[in-house]
Image 1 (cartoon, rainbow, N blue to C red):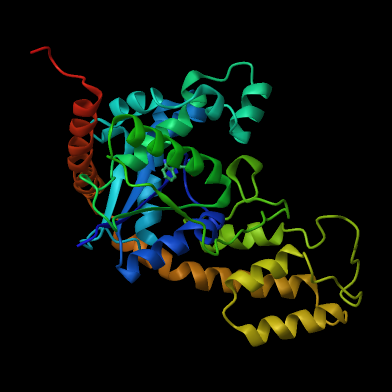
Image 2 (cartoon, rainbow, N blue to C red; image 1 turned 45 degrees about the vertical axis):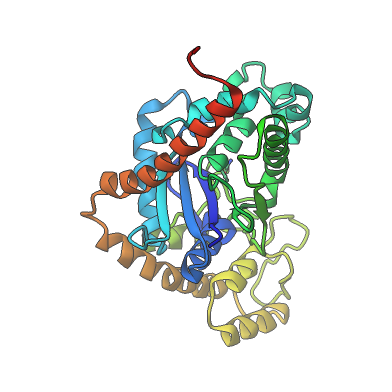
Length: 344
Ligand code: TRP
């Protein structure tokens, strides 16, 4: 039977927020529940060092936070098809990474737009940062079904910001297979209908560094405070001074959030109608949003509480072990084909 695998991951740089849920976790959970693929969810702690090298002590805590966030949204590593994998602890991942470098043209790597921008703007960019796309290819190929059989599948669901990396990963796989023999199943991307969530300030992205997040672990009061501070008019073009002024719904972060999190569609329609007509205050629209977001977060909070005493180390070690076993099979085949062996 063909092997169907999925690998995807996140850098462990701290607590996750609603943007992570909308942009990734929701999809991951659906994929897990469909049960058609064996899912490897990667805690990218090595890749976190590309930007967080200065605070190593935070890293362990970040891994813990991300694991708790994943558990709290219903990712379930007790299912046989779900593995939480800690990047730094996968056997042979680093070796695979350096060997993949040998078939990666420098010029091709440098074509990556993110890399180009960052390397041009940061005078202290590291080699670790420069090669992270290849390193990410190693993450993916560590769980490549080996030996590959017809029909085997290796999918990488991500946001479309990762598409240049996946393109490179496929090219690396092709080049290796051509030069040395077929080892890697060409990975497929899966961008799906990944959602995007603006920040509480209306900026295109919710992100910790912009200080415009609502975290999955936020309590009721924190949500209320974040919503209270939300701008209804981030562009400043449609100032609304009184509740009797007609408001603008389109592009208004408050309504974008209502559309995403408020399950009471009738209420949302009613609020929009009254907002356009100047018959509802910002405060009321925000108050309803606070309720909606807290309703959304409540089951997540409940699940988090259930895992308060869970042994995270054990959970992560079990998933990492599965990926490690596969990586050992992969690297042995790679070494053999690259003739990296003792002389006879
Ligand atoms: N670069 C990804 C991000 O920033 C994280 C990541 C690391 C990843 N390794 C991966 C994603 C492998 C998909 C596959 O979110």
